[in-house]
Image (cartoon, rainbow, N blue to C red; front, side, top):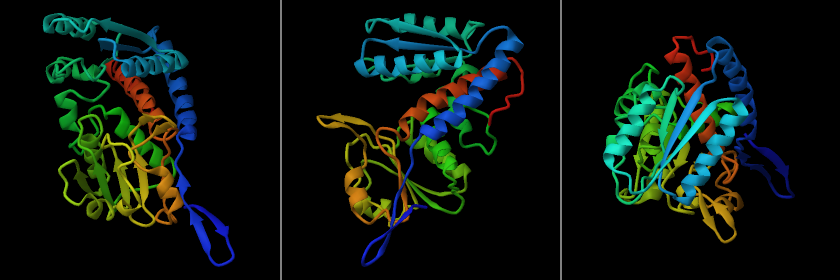
Length: 306
């Protein structure tokens, strides 16, 4: 699990650091190969369209990262930037036009929308076969099916791929997910149920959070609260995935107090994902995986990349 360090009085096992770089390299090679296969077969590349409403700085950065990855893989990419004053009718028409586009295999509506606009009606307008964020009600429901039919939301997909790369399995293990968003917490819990883990979904109304999280073999933290998880929240030897990201004066941190956990002995024999360099980059990779999957399915070609 970790690295043995011999001291004068005892032998300590350091936690494994779950970095995403090797997962990215392996998956990029696979996706590049099968993007070429699709492009040769269909005489066009897979196509991804992003709808961005308004000028939220974080959304601008996230979309630029998606665009960069599509360029690396050879996808066709469109970004549709709409005014924050756009009417519901105009946004609905944009989604409808992309649903009909032969060149577009995947559509995402970049969240959050400006102000207090509810994205739910617009997410439901996206054709489920192009819903590569996995947020259409049909795809969200299919997560609870035993058959892997729908699209898996990108961040939960990345979490499981990261752990599989390092050899972890979930059957019979206790998994606690902190956070219940439709983007991460809820779909991640559904995926872990598929993997036969015993799953607890904790959130802001959970009483005595530490008493819940400290029972977890696998602790997934997507609470949106910086440095929430401290050593008291973690079972000795647990595997901790930090899905949060926050900017502070000294740089980027997650929902987990990484420095405190590393300095304690609670992760002896366990593992932790860093921020940055952990789960984050795999979210974009998951989007590319889903877009390629959508392209193959729309053209009735067997998708070779699981």
